[in-house]
Image 1 (cartoon, rainbow, N blue to C red):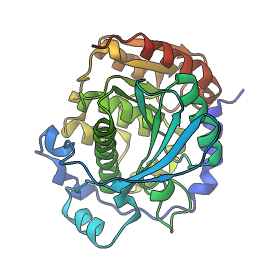
Image 2: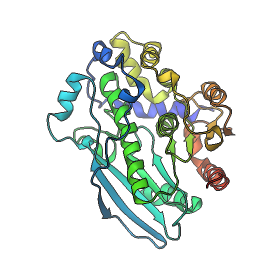
Image 3: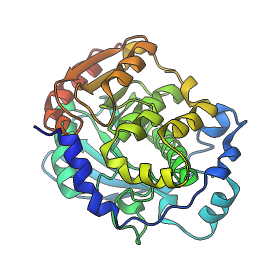
Image 4: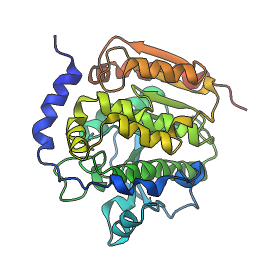
Length: 337
């Protein structure tokens, strides 16, 4: 039987034919060399003014929108000029708060979704609300750049400009996602000093792992079916065929992409929160985030708690009920002052 991951790669090909032709920015990547970790991935410089708006009301829930100006400042000069040339949709951060009634005093969760994942009512009312109720905690769902309301009007699909052969733009999108998440954490902690953890699915899981290496204020981290090896991800993920093809036209392969991350010190990132506050959930037949690469990360990270599912990457979604159960037990078992 064909792996569901491979089938997904085939299904997205017609959609990706609509993508904009990426710029070749490989010769501009030198702009990121020589920076410290703190300069590449800075902490929030302040607390932005946050706008809130009620979204919808279901029995037992309070839900609202949060929005604020992104604190992101691009490093590469030409992209920085492009970024600031006019008011851009990606410059506003949007997050959806889903709060089950009666969860005051419980830990909260900052959640990041995956690449190309649309912002649908089904996702919000089904997956996220079910997760919030099962976990018995508030979930604040971050929309990464180029997705949802941050998607340019000219983009044919969510994430079309997020992860492409325009490596400068892709890396700036990663930097912005990380800073936006850390800023959102500051907002949440400003509202209440109670514990906040981070979780994410797929590429969102890669960011949950990255944030565990950069942001000690998170109480826990739960990457779902994800590792942090960006070269391996480009090599393996069936949905990144268009990116591989475009980069090959520019003379780059997945190994070169991975080398760029090595040069900027990405491979040296290690958790700044204890291993016993990290939960990994993984798929044995994953064609996006290779299981062996994830096992190597697990070993480097001091062997935190990990649960394996005998399924593919895309086949993990039906296991979210089980995964959420693992996460609730894990969070409830953490010691706190």
